[in-house]
Image (cartoon, rainbow, N blue to C red; front, top):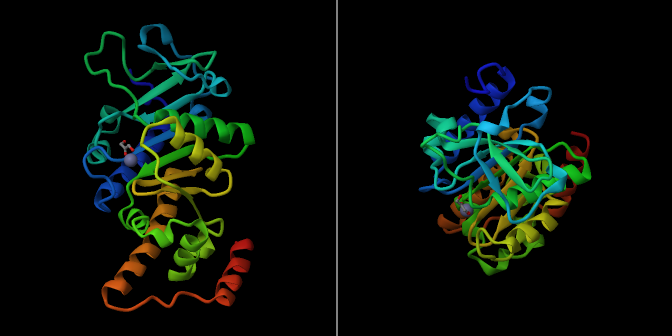
Length: 271
Ligand code: 2HA
Ligand code: ZN
C-alpha cells in the first residue's frame, strides 16, 4: 500500500505539485529535466508510523541536523516536469531524514524495487533552504526551482544584474508586481549549478526575498503553498515579459513612477 493512499492531505498536495509541474512545462520554463521541487510534508504525516527498515537508505555528505526525521516530497534527478505532471510518484520521491539528519530513507520505494532513483542534483540547496526556514521559524514548506525564461533573459543584460535596478524595472512594469511581491526579487551573480556556493549565496538572499534569481540560469522560490509559489514566479515573469514586449515593439518602457510605486507599496502593506 502506498503511504499516500490513506492520507487525503498528502494526496491533494501531490495533485497540486503535478498541476504546477504541468504549468512549468506549458510556460516553457522546463525544457528537458529543467527545474526541481521539494516540499516539507512533515506536518501532513506526523503521527504515522513508518516502517523504514524495508526502504533504501542514502547517506549524505552534509548533514542537516535541524531537519532530523522530517519528511519531504522531492523531484527525481533527470526527471521531466511534463512527466511529473502526469505521473507524480514515478518522478518524485517521498523521503524521510534519519534521526541525525545525516541521511535519508526513500519511503516511496522498497529496497527490492528496480525503479530507485536519486533526488534532484539541487537537493543540498533545497535542504539548506528548508533548514534555514526551520531555523527562523517561518512557515514556508515549498522550494521551487525553474528556468523562468524572461527573468533569465533579463540577466543577460548587465544593467539588470543589479538587485536595485532589477526590482525597479520589474515593479514598474505592472502594479500587481509591487502589490504581491513588495519584498522584490533577490539577485545572485552566476555560480555553477549544483554547487555548495549557489546554496550559500541563495540562502543569504532568501532571508529577505521569497524569490532569488540566479544569473543566466533560473529562479529559486520559497512559499507555503506550491500554487502560491508558482504564482509569485508567474507575476515576476509577467513583468519581464511586458518589458521585452515593449522593447520588441521598438519602444522604451516608461515604467511606473516612484510616487506610483510608493502608493502601491502602502496598498501592499495593508494587503
Ligand atoms: O534540475 O534545473 O539546475 C535540473 C536543474 C538544475
Ligand atoms: Zn536549473
